[in-house]
Length: 329
Image (cartoon, rainbow, N blue to C red):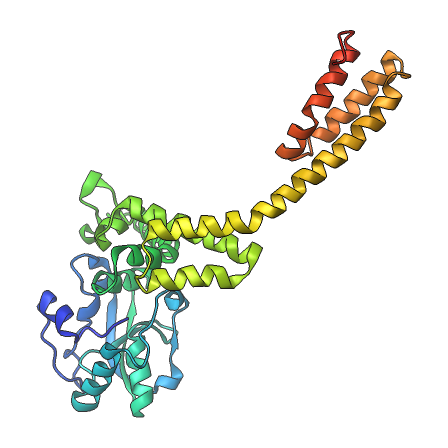
C-alpha cells in the first residue's frame, strides 16, 4: 500500500499526523484504515506501537495480487526522502503473526534506511477488510485496475463477514451498526456493497472476475507468459477491462483454434472409418444383432463430447431407422 502521508490522501481525509515515538501510545493512530467507506477496518483492537526490525516482518499473502511501487517510482522516492528527514508518521498495521496488512512500502524503506519500523498489531478485523480499506484511498489507480485487484480479496472478505454474522448469532447479539449496509437492509459485506464502497459498478467487478478466470485458463493451458502480459497492462492502467477481456479471448481463440480443427478432422476420420466398418456388418446382421449393436453404441455415446456426438449423429440416425424397418438413408 502507498503511504498515507501523501498529501492527496491526507488532505482528503482530514488526518493530521505527527512523528511517532515508541512511548507515544496515541500518536499516529491507525488513521489509514479508519476509512468512512470501510468503517469495519477501524474496529480492531489496536495494541501499543512496537518497533520491529523489517527483516522480522513478512507481507500478508493477500497482498500478493496488489502491485507495489518500484524503487524508482517518484512516489516511493518521495516517501524514502520524507522518512529519512521526518521519520515514520504512522505505524504499519500487522496481524498477530507479524504479517504486514498495511505499510509494506514502509518496510522496504525501513530496510533501505537501516532502521526499525513502527508497527501496531490489530485484532478483531479481517485482513481482507483492512486491505480493501487501503484500496479505497488508492486514487492513483483506474477503477478497472481497482476492480481487478479487488477480485482475489472478495472470497476472504465475504468469509470474514459470514464469520462475524455467525459469531453474533452465537452470542445472541446484533450485528454492529457499522457493519450494516444501507442499501436494501443487507448486513455484512456483499459483492455489490464492496463494489460500491470502492467506487465502481458491480458490472465492472463482474468483468474483473471474468478476466481473472480467462487469465487462469490461459495459464493452465498455454503457460504464464501470455496471461502475465495482459495482467501487467491492466495493473499499469494501460488496458481497460473491456479491451483486456477481448485480448484474453483472442489468445484463447488463436491458440486453440488449430487444435480444435485438428480434433474435428480426427473425429471425422475416426467416425467415417467406424461407420464404414459397421456398415459392412450391418447388412449381414439380423434384427437382434442390430438392436444389440445400437444399444452398445448408445451406451458409448453417453461418454462422448458434444463434438463427437454431432459427428456421429447422422450415422446413428441412419442405423436406427434401418433397425425400425425404415429406409437406411
